[in-house]
Amino acid sequence: MATIEEIDLPDYPYGPIIGAILAGEASSAFDEFVTSGRIAELTAPEDRVGGYAMRLVPAKDYLNATRLRRRMARDWDALLARYDAIVAPTTGVVASPIGERFSAYFARGGRSPLIPAGSTVGLPALSVPTGFGERGLPTSMQFLGRAGAENAILAVGRAYQERTGWHWERGGRRRAEG
Image 1: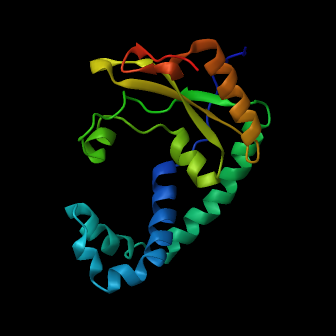
Image 2: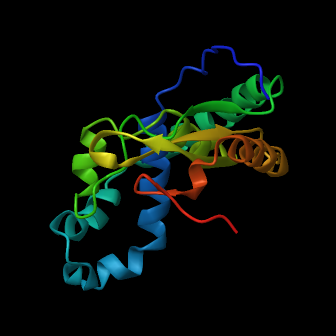
């Protein structure tokens, strides 16, 4: 089905780049919500202050991040031109248990470097189930492709699922196909 090889990803500070871009854009998008004071009605304490924190991202950080985004897009496109997809674990850990806060999940290593890179550059990705790990929680991998190559990524994901059947599993039990 595939030829697999290890590759080196373009080296960028992905977290800070996407963080500055998202903070700047979210600050603009939610400006009225924050300035009206309605942000205090949110239930999670960290969400009540996050809107104010996003407003403190300096314009120079936002602009530098958008400049790096353009360079990242060129580097990722050059890398992906050689492949149908890049394959990696979707996250570094099993799925988050129901009721666990995302901050605790990500503190355990839940983020993959492909997620912020793909989000920053606008690359299509697809996650597919790969089985079950600790405490019977699901695991998955993702296929990341070149911008505009959504159909290729879907074809790779479908081919994988046709050969494995993990998408039929629920909590370790096989669901009736059909």
